[in-house]
Length: 400
Image 1 (cartoon, rainbow, N blue to C red):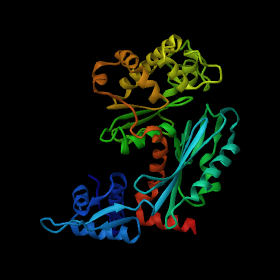
Image 2 (tube, rainbow, N blue to C red):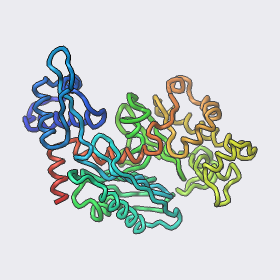
Image 3 (tube, helix red, strand yellow):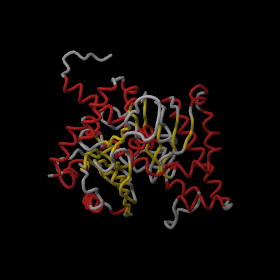
Image 4 (cartoon, rainbow, N blue to C red):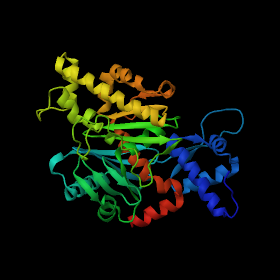
């Protein structure tokens, strides 16, 4: 138990305001009595605190209509338009961006395609800036931007958003966090992270892994990434570089990866591997074409896809042995690949130890293709949720 000695009343109040707003943000409307039960705070304290949040405009309080036994408990709900964040899922060939309101409501959304082979640092910044300006035009007039979150397919230093290495983008040591602070944020919190890490966060708090404390989220597009939740908390490693499962070597005699190593997992199950295995690596097709060919009976495509499923299962078996997860979620194009190769994946997973294998559940993301996007939003809300009134004041000051 954490000692409260030396903690001021203001700090206790700020902590309790944060607890209440976090519950409402993640779980939606709740009665004051339920909030009291979940936090252990008494009814009068909850009433005072939710009134403060309501006065700030972050929540709305309503009295239930109808007759019941006893005094009705006031319902408290987050106001989606009161505070919002800019969230970006920056992929190798396209970017998805959204204006996400308090409570996780998507208020506006944009998507733009870009070329993989000619998208440098400056191009990326112009691209993100244009998307931010477009989204901001759709922002609620009475709302305030509370932060910016960006998921990228690379190794990211958490403390400052430096993209140390993004091989599928051709980036090395790109200070994306600093650039975004100067270009877009203007005093707002900026969080840059690995796309799979953000996907894991979103599925853990809002999707297929709610209620599970040990989770692996696999993000598959051109490359393969992994976000890992251990005992309820993101596993990031000492510098924020943990979870690079796509660069786990599974085939020492395999192809050279863009990272420079030979036989990385993504060389066996990434987009290029799927197209090569199915005979559609002519530059005119994508993974969905390969899946469609296999479904319509193309023998080469079907056989190639079976091999991909086997390699997916081999890699997942290694992860199951290492982390003993409750659930492994297949995101990105791996959603579609797993749906077609589940039998092969499960057969190859028999190489995992029986005890952890029996505990794991294989799942598709409940958030569909938006796991990384919504995870970026959750991270961007961090400062506001940790200190609702102070975070709101700082956001308003940044906007003025």
